[in-house]
Length: 128
Figure 1 (cartoon, rainbow, N blue to C red):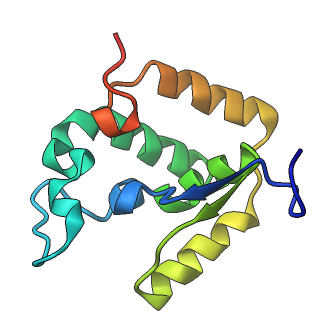
Figure 2 (cartoon, one colour):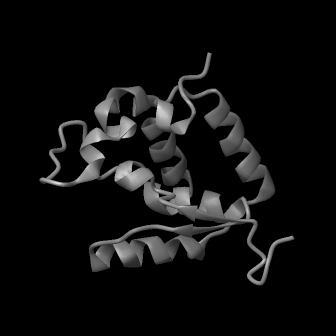
């Protein structure tokens, strides 16, 4: 069922086009032709304030960056993440996500926190 690599899914853009790196702020301006300018997670940045706070807090608990935590979570779910990296330092940061493994309990805790967290439509909308 998992294929040659044992992966259930290939996760394209596991960092939500940079949002989950916590390096793109609310007032970010994107260059001409940068499609992120029209993406829901950047159009309504404030809708993800609670999500980003959660990711920051959990990353700190694991002594990781928000990007590393996000990628480790994707890998713990059995998916192979394919993050885009334009800078060598981001590539190194992303690769370091393999330096720690989230336990099943850790993943369950993150999942429960995500279920209770408001977020923009790109992530499934605000929880009610």
